[in-house]
Length: 195
Image 1 (tube, rainbow, N blue to C red):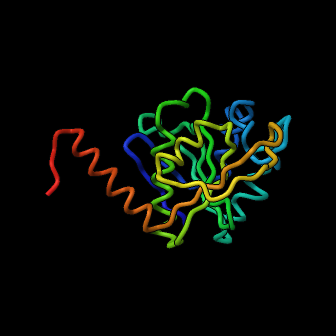
Image 2 (cartoon, rainbow, N blue to C red; image 1 turned 120 degrees about the vertical axis):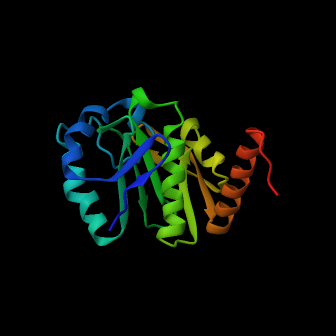
């Protein structure tokens, strides 16, 4: 069972087949798909989201191999604005995308923090690894802010071509320490103190 999650501005709901129609309207944009794995078809088919949800994502969720959430603003819970996923695997444990109107607002930082907590605290995995195309600066910044470190660099195939890719990693203990430090910094910024 996948739990719904919340952040200050977002509702993360377990992915449902009913989400496919909304997602099909906002997902097939070059700026969104360019740095996704080359397995994503491009040009994107008119039934691409439905097919992916029905044939791949939902069965993987049922098997307990993947965890997918739709992202919705708390102020508009009926509208899907993006998706975030966790995946079992050697070096690709988290992926995400967000629609163009909602980019550059820090929303994906909130979603990534929520699912990273879930990865370590609910699912109990000891380490998270994520690949990031070096040219994908927005996505890389999220991993950097989370305290992930580069452990390998290699070339990988994406929808937009082959790109140099950083494999980033963080352990459960490193994540918890980073979250504690982040909390301390936020308290200090608000003029509070920590004993």
